[in-house]
Length: 437
Image (tube, rainbow, N blue to C red; front, side, top):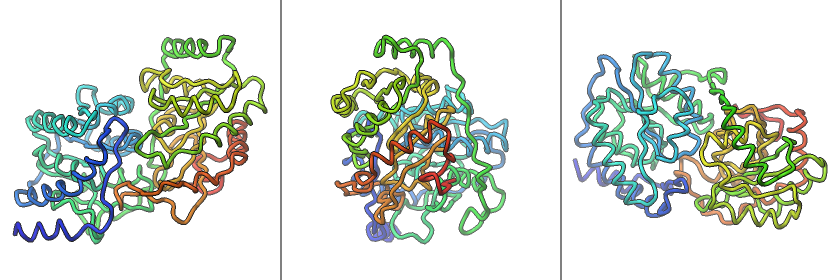
């Protein structure tokens, strides 16, 4: 039987099954290799020891999600569904340490029940996961819901928690994507449906009394997708505004446009060209004498932002990388801004918690699957090769020439930005025409 499992693990994958990790995990290539080759073997081995046990009453549920920066926002409807169905159930989350704050913002899981693991390098990440799992096993979870899509690390973690049952996305008839037979309650991942709907479908299956093949046999309506509202703290907002005044001493709360131009080193193909951004910003400043532009990001994004500022050469455009010290401070900044222009990246999803409009530039991922849930308009060129990353290749692309973004004319981005600021658009649409949710 072990030999059969090994043959399955080696022969089934026909896609590039690797994972793209958030920027804190610098050894992402090694972790991809580990997930693909070592992970398949471990999943196969653990499948030999898998026992399915019934759940008499669901008292504790653990949600696992390691690798998506905006996953907390996208999973809100799913967790809310579980909370409504099982109001007395104790909910926990296992995530990256850098994502803990986004899960706290949902207000659905107590802070002490959000368990973060370190991700500064691969070994520290793996040891941190193993150490955390030891403590989680003692909690005797009834159910684990694996929100990660076809990564072996999350499947292994789900098994090692020792819960009575595991719910997760399952490949069914797909070739590749092998994760052993560690899932008790499988759910199909619908590549044509929004990720928020996929998460909700998984949770509906997890709590259903009857299982089908394949799951989930039923619609997930757009009206079921919910968002929490960001509650501004006046004192914290005032502190963030004071930092803006350090950059713009004469700023009197004139319109602010935020630009998030750099995804970081792991997925540079998602970056709109810096020169194009400079033209868009110059156009915005040329049309409004009061508007100021801040380029935002973490300190490692500063080089790209400084390059854009140097190209624009306007005192009303400044680099604000590192200007916010927490996710809540970033949300305060977004909340009192007029517009956020962003690549397909975390801030576009976090901004969905505020009423501030978002102009998102998509390329490698499908906007129909990952479009922000807030007041957003997505610009997308519909290249035949796009999206080039998905759960089917575990989010890896060898593309080094993102013509899908390079051919998105700055003039079109500028006109779209002005229309969004003037309120002349329909939100949750692609190019102002096609609804993505």
